[in-house]
Length: 208
Image 1: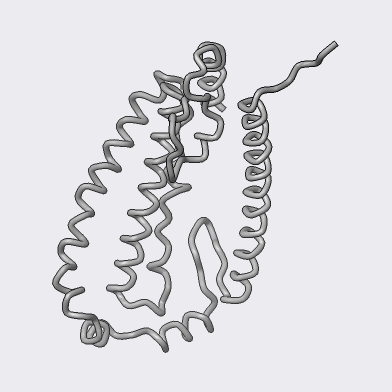
Image 2 (image 1 turned 45 degrees about the vertical axis):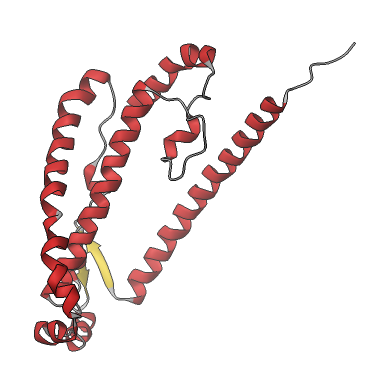
């Protein structure tokens, strides 16, 4: 009696699932290692987090202020072309704030209807670099601007990923770069039976 011989597609699906599981475990290990490293850096650079805010010890603040570059020196050393394009660089704040507000509205109105757990914005947008006393006022502004922009994009990406998982959790026919972390659990392109069978399960997972 001959047994079941899996197809190449079955082998590929199993291999991909195993790799995805290893990646998930490695991500957990990486998170633990990074948390340990952050704690070590707190001790090394003499700061603590109290009630969600960063506080440096007195000797650290003094050392930071001693090496802070003045605004005048910063502007003198900045390339002229960087100063000229600065208005365009900062003009991006307008669409970013609009996107932020629109995504908040979208989540507030739509996610409760769909039964999707809302994305915690505070986990993605962290504005704490302005507390670094070795940065002058322009450098602090730059750091918070970049932190806001990149945090917002990550936050919006997760909102979009949850929306995609609800409406169309199907992989693309071709490999694409930069997929979000939820994409690995999506259904294979062309697998109609799996779509009808697993869609409800994937949607239910968004409630946890």
